[in-house]
Image (cartoon, rainbow, N blue to C red; front, side, top):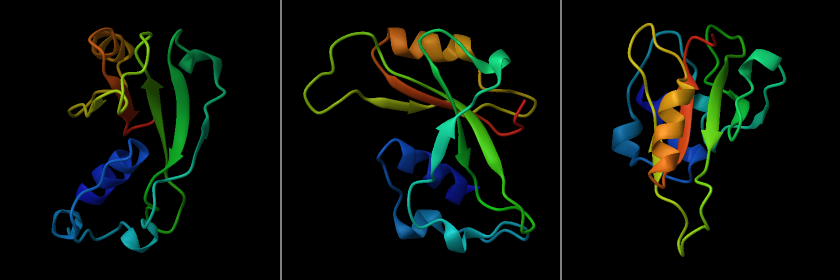
Length: 121
């Protein structure tokens, strides 16, 4: 799970130390997680929210199959400060989703946000 989180941080330009990334999992293939994951726009209409970009990024392959992950990315509407915006990764609990209301709350406070939906709902 930490490698998946490390991949999300990579999308935000942040990294974990090698020790923090080590966590063996039975079904996940972490060998290909060496750089920030590729992403593309999510094109399904029900995922679109004003002021947010709906994306699919390449998660860690699961049992040999591709595992795309849906997420919202958003930035504050204010001018970009020197050094960029501070960032937040919104990780929900079991049964949760990428909550657009939470994304709006954090961007209104000046944070760049990524909110993944682990279940691709």
